[in-house]
Image (cartoon, rainbow, N blue to C red):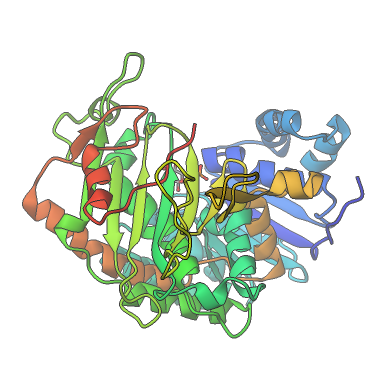
Length: 488
Ligand code: BG6
């Protein structure tokens, strides 16, 4: 296959937490795939940094094992793997002490792009940022990359922002929300702002409601302690679903430029009304025949944390006045499926008489944008049912599954981390969250969580493999609407 990628500039990328789970499972496999695709220039270097006292060769062995999986899933050769591992270096470092920092300073090249990935807990962000400057390691334009969770609430997010700001300017800070790196999420912007067709209809006058679903079939197994302290609201809504909401609802930015896009997203968050408690349904999954319950997974029989949440939200601005946005996300649901659905209104007047049994056309168009699986879009339109027998209407999908329409080009699309890491090297912050955006999202989230704490109520329960608690269905039924199926 002819590579379509343009190599990025030479870089030194340091991964703090270089032996950790995220580095082995996501960051390094992503870099490896970019390497195999020819996007990493010959002079690129990756430096693992962690507490363990490993030699460079031991580190390469460790990462080599981790990459076997990635190797199985692509058409990279063993030679590719050997060449990639040769780009790896390793420095044992003490994030809170003095050990290793001078060694790191000695190998960093001042004349290439420098990026520092903080793949460590947020409690170490400040220590690492400080030492990168104190030991004169990070140059003026060096970039730092931080992962979610970015804070636990507004005060902690503010503290983190302030700590990082002491050492790095905002244009150097890349806060990752991996949902922004997903192919379809960017396609949402292309769809809205690269076509004439949708934008004139993209408002309360024509849109009945919007549904955003991020459903997972996995539980919280293995992450119970973290999750029980977060819940679906902090783990998914405050960041991933909020980002999807923003991109769906925002005004067209004047250009596709980091601050222009982020300014528009911020306006959406600020216009979000506080939901009433009756606009929210929280749930916890029950055990099934072969799977444990949420309470067992988090090892806390008294837990009141939600593994599912559904919300009815209103955006208080001209464009969306009167159009509700329904959001839902949860673990151990029927299937893994994420999508955004724009449900348009019915035509104001039907000229067709449709007697019972004479056609099932609803007349309301529906645009669905699938993030996963089977990335793509489909638009439901009403047409005449072919054949004799008068004017019978039916709804048909105009399906655009990317893999079908674009073939290899779609199935080879880089995963979110590949794209985001390359954007860091290119110095493009469009798909990263700005500090004020994160704070605004927490400012909206915190009072909702405080209300739950004060009420001290247990979430509803739901069956493993279901679509969530009954009450979430009722939330929609009350408004004469219904959730889209979670297709298996
Ligand atoms: C993470 C959450 O940010 O996103 C996880 O912490 C969740 O709980 C994951 O499972 C979902 O990501 P994806 O890309 O698999 O939809």
